[in-house]
Image (cartoon, rainbow, N blue to C red; front, side):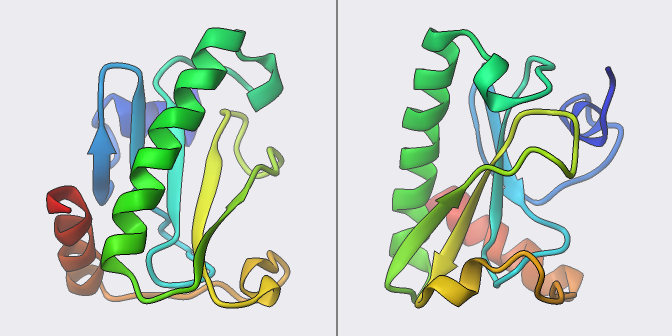
Length: 129
């Protein structure tokens, strides 16, 4: 079940990494709803988040919390929204989105196309936060 996320984990496809440990990777979404939209994924290939072992799911949430805290320090927003959809890529993942209103998490909205240098600079800020 090799997905685009598996290729990112293996380094076959580049990403704007914002956090990583032995089990998880967090990177900027290439088609974000808002600037700073982050995807958090387990390094093990699991299709849907609720197919994960309980301990791994708990660790994923703790890792996501740490990433969200970094995001809140760096990005101007009221909160960091959290959502799991599971339809776009057959690899479990969490969306962390800087929000000021509930409409900021509307996945039917047109996605942003941000310049590479802007994404790179933001990723660096988040890595260092």
